[in-house]
Image 1 (cartoon, rainbow, N blue to C red):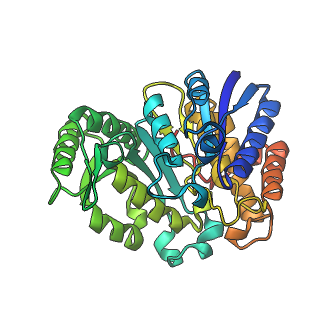
Image 2 (cartoon, rainbow, N blue to C red):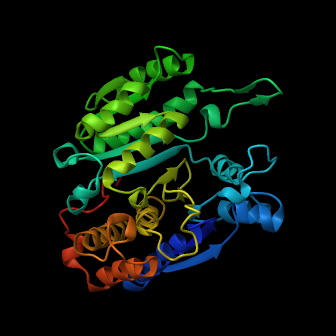
Image 3 (cartoon, helix red, strand yellow):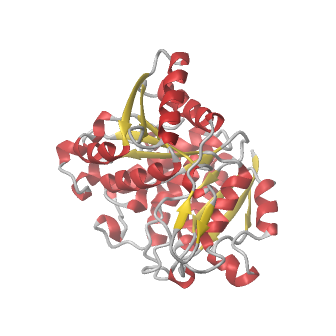
Length: 366
């Protein structure tokens, strides 16, 4: 297969973890005879410094023409002035809107070998295997914003069409998994949430094989800590999904493990680890690259249709987590390059044992 992949290393540890993910994709290409062409572009703070804007026209054009986009991270204290007219996050929000990637998939599976690193007791995290489906291009992040000397407002607005399209992604995913969908809202207070709940309830009639339950966002924040293994697919709006999925990611032992895929009507998706730019460790070569590598596995699956290759990458990561070396955020001492090399070695060694691994980190979004 031939594919053109735009990389957006971005800021902080973004360039380091993106380089590791690209190395793994190159190893996959060599192993299976694919031809992946990589095109590095600017996004975020580095783009502001170089071009004066967080999403340059050249970056947007390259992404629009790509088969997939792999992002590292954006932002950092250098660009964190709340009063600034231009901010790195504007580039990411603009890119999501331009690509039309309205469904953000964030899978979470607690690896047995890492149970001790979870803040919860082993019995609480045993069997945790869930996926968040976060609406990504609506809500308060994209609503009209106003501010004066004494007040500020952020409009949260959703249409039926926006809710329907992301809910159908979640229903279809639940149908392929364990047939259980949890929809999260704040319908006891917010009008947008009442529309959300009524829309999801209406769509449920099209999926009689999926069990649907509704949870208020505040109680859901508690339930993710008290009975996380109860959940399968969780669908929610933009702001709630951002907060809850970060909370849930901590259950796995580190934010550095968590990948994401942002998908829309086009085959081209946007893939990124959820850990952020981590400016305190940027440039030291010690960042955990596994979230970025697992995001590359989602890229293989969803944008390139290479399921076998995706499973091999996930199994190679699972092997490294089980046997080492481990990065520092997971109790080890390995640097970014060492962890990346170990994943590539597991792929090269690999094989059948890796592809048949019984505890892959993420094969739940296929």
